[in-house]
Length: 440
Image (cartoon, rainbow, N blue to C red; front, side, top):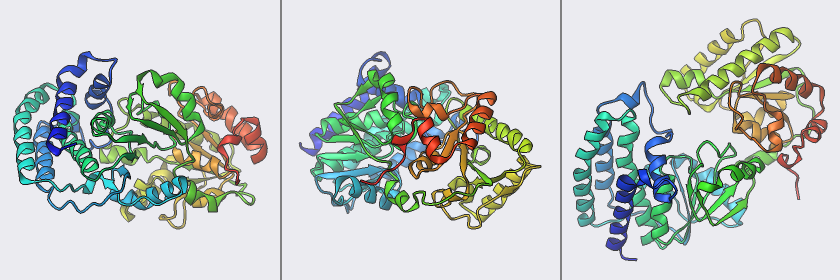
């Protein structure tokens, strides 16, 4: 397909989403509108960012810079490629795809470094269109309660145009997307559909109900057994032709750390999401930060339990955010020692060591909601979830739901039972064998 013809088709799709998506709730155009303007995005951060009057201006500037820098076109791709958000993910994602596909992917498309070889005329047209749209976005954004998310759409329009164009010019026929949790996934799917690219979504092993209620893709990969159960509840808003089952995206790195001995019988670990630091940094959670409350409730229930059961130590396994600098790491230790006052709290000797390399340091792990606990089950260790106060949606309908506590009473009962059971009995009792890795 010619570059200009594809460009026009992209713009028509985008305009349909903007102007008609609101009323087409049962079509992919409507799903794209819903996700762009009403769903959560992890890209909006800071203190009260949605109330930032200058948000549209800032995103307009970033979109303009992205358009103007498209000159070199240094990326070289084959007919199968991969798209993800941050360049630092490349090694892990490439190794995972090599494990699953049995071959190495040549070249990648990364959102934060994307380069497409485009003529100056194209850049001029894109800039002109951006300038025409910006006043409209400024006017509507002035009255919007989600000013930053609204302004971000300008940048997402440019990014998805670039992804579609590079896939077309490089003759990509299948694209694996890691990061479909972002709120522009349906727009990406619509653009790639007209570009003749088969899009495959590969999610993390987290609940898909949170970010995949609407999906536009050729194929969807389930990376954890409970996800297929969730799909039964939400597939009515999916424009997906086929599905596949793949192992955890972290499978290759986890295999060397499969359980092969006794875990520390005195220590219970807490898999942190760093809620206190997310709040401090202005990182926003889902449902008006209700998911932050689930973790705080979990921590309070765990504290009350350990104050009674003093025979156990608490090992804090920090979120990467909590150890990204020595300053944060020192604050992290202070915070948890104060929160769990009266309990013997220990921390990793080396804060740079990933949590999965310390699974054997505790016989049981607690988390509100964390994919690291899924990794722990994969390696053959006991783990329970405690999103206390949450609605009945995490892992619902799957065997994993049996190790989820949503009330303090359920938490105590589940914890006491999990402590009594051996690893093998734990997996058998709760029907979790499909989550534990078994070599061929």
